[in-house]
Image (cartoon, rainbow, N blue to C red; front, side, top):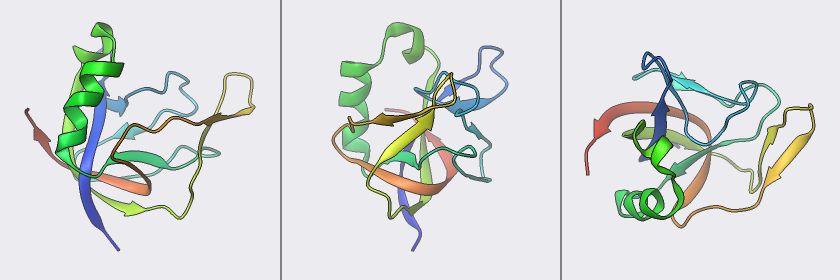
Length: 120
């Protein structure tokens, strides 16, 4: 079942692409294109989505450094919920690194489609 949520992404350093917000390992990073379905990078866990816009601003204010906030973009998105309850990504040395912290209002998704940019 497709649901609607909100996805935080960042502009690439060249400002030509939308990328995973927090992932710095290029093997795990997802490139997003507005209107196209995006999937986790091969060998990585599901994607994170906020269920409601009310959870986005507190997360940005509390957890993102100024270097990321300047490039951070919020998109309304459609997503397919994941059955997984764990998040992981392939680390720099090829090992799976589990992520145990989920901000309030976060759900895991098997795919995400960016619909429109939101300004708050």
